[in-house]
Image (cartoon, rainbow, N blue to C red):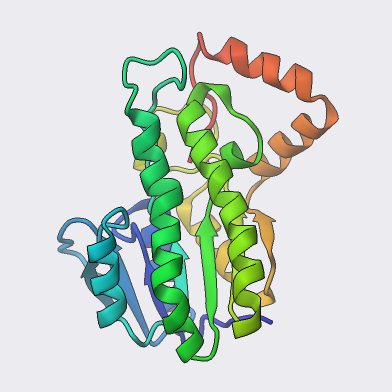
Length: 247
């Protein structure tokens, strides 16, 4: 099973900037009939063909209202994310991990639950969940984010199994370091958000399940697989130095 961007009607959460904005623009460039740009705040510069949808993925009433309005959706891109930039255990913000989990896990779950019936009614469609390499391997210097994204990856697999009978595909994107506001503190090379959107839409079109979207994600996964102990010790050392990666 696979879903095409051409002729689709898509909803992108966190679509007002970064990777989400790139998805909105790329879907439209590939012939999407309409794209709902999900955002918690008003957006002045909407791309032609995009329709602003005020949406808070952590608020079930807001999500339910979106599902009631956007009954024509055939593609759902769960991109909205939160990284508090704090430690997990030795933290000055003990509620940070909970906020990350609310957005990165429960927010995605809220959207999938609300839009699964919409997708089914429209022929099945597709879900794309924008995850992170921090969810594929334990990343100590972004502990709460890493844990929440790992939960999101498991959610993608479980949702795929549950929704396959209705013809809905679920593609999880494992994203490395990208030039976004979330990673403006990050040191090192970063991918352009448009690259992630292009790879993600192509993966959706092929009906793929899990895709590493860039070289950083591939290299980090390989390093961890080769020597997880060494990788985790390197992560511990990085707690005292500059951050190297993030979405």
